[in-house]
Image 1 (cartoon, rainbow, N blue to C red):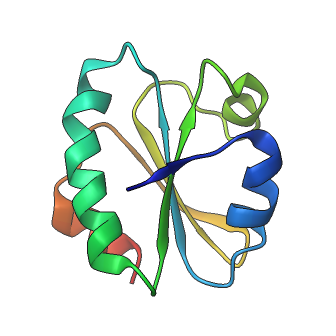
Image 2 (image 1 turned 180 degrees about the vertical axis):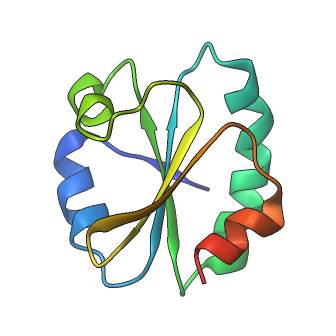
Length: 102
């Protein structure tokens, strides 16, 4: 299951990660976010041990959402070596997400 992060956890688990990380910036009220959630769970299972998938609630972690210029949800950002390398907005097919983490 994709773990939901606070700003403090984000520093170590995302920016300090040695493997690729995908962060789903979502909102509990967002319909497309709810559609994407089971796909992200599949991706997290498929890439376990090689990459990580986390979630950030934009309503709870407003400063993080602003820091990464999240304008709409869901926004998915892939980080490698602590740096954002790819950003996708909206529901994405599972294979696109898996490929982004390889």
